[in-house]
Length: 114
Ligand code: AMP
Ligand code: ZN
Image (cartoon, rainbow, N blue to C red; front, side, top):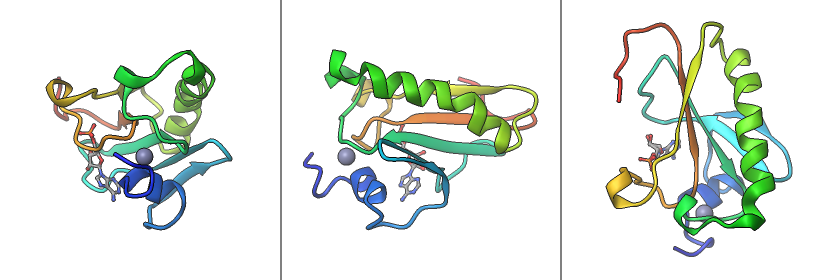
């Protein structure tokens, strides 16, 4: 997948619209188009990485930033009683968009468990 055609790269560059939750120079958070929970947004690195399978030590900083951002953004989105992070990796991991992303899921239960 080239960064040119990658859907989430295009969202990161603002070429495809998204409902933004947070943005800075290296990461973007936006609402999932098909929410699986009352609160469901994604955090992506702006720079293309396929998945954790192809990530390396050079991604440690941005991955740490993405995870560290999650509680703050989750609370801002109304997750005042907990939330969950999911990262799907590769075909057997159920990954559909081949640009690394963290799902943040929350809101009142019940919603689907793993
Ligand atoms: P995954 O299966 O982990 O690759 O998840 C991909 C997620 O991206 C799914 O939950 C989709 O609903 C979501 N998605 C796909 N296209 C868009 C889009 N244009 N804007 C926001 N979310 C999207
Ligand atoms: Zn990409």
